[in-house]
Image 1 (cartoon, rainbow, N blue to C red):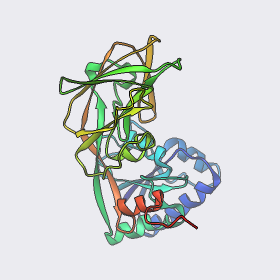
Image 2: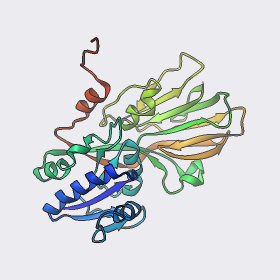
Image 3: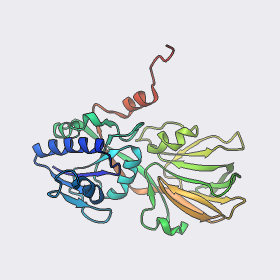
Image 4: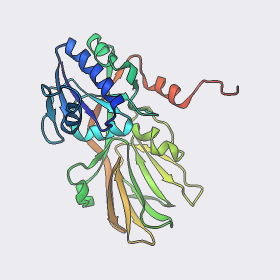
Length: 293
């Protein structure tokens, strides 16, 4: 077994559960690599010099069985930039609060290894979206993809922006709003959900357009096929607006056309039999619970 470990949450509490995982991996004589910055932090208080390290540009390859992410959903979004198109399955151990991607509780960290060895898991393909090179945004020349969503929003102003939107070169509408979210099924439980968008199962071949606080109240979230090519153009009182790919942000001049489409590869997520997507929805959204008392 070959396992990579990543975290951007440097807390003593996290280290305790990392050490539990390492103990379980040692029983299986697994080969372990730890992200370089996290390895440096771990080495201050624990003996970690025997482990290999990796970065965003070296140390990972297709031979890895999984990457274990310690943190919340944001940590998994960051982990995808390390994995890229290598096809390494990701599993999240939740050391934060609400987690739709990091579904395993930290107290169950040993199950990451135990259930994998037993084969009690499925690998779920999660689609990505990307900003194409035609958009000419230098900040996204290398990491141009997002697992959750691509969002355009206002910058340096309290005024709304206008987002002209075209689907497969056909004009859809102009959203007069604080911004627009283009979400994957994975991202449907993130920013899009908080703005009134629908929940979509991860395997659906769909994207969601969700306006952020639209002034035209008849503007509603729209579910489209994931093979749709999207083109948007922003105008507003300020000269620039923001575009974000998950947590990575760039400033773009108003009037510049941005081209968005489904990425040519997907991210693999390990889903253990005891932690299905539907179970996660029930637990996180309190579905089926009587809250009247």
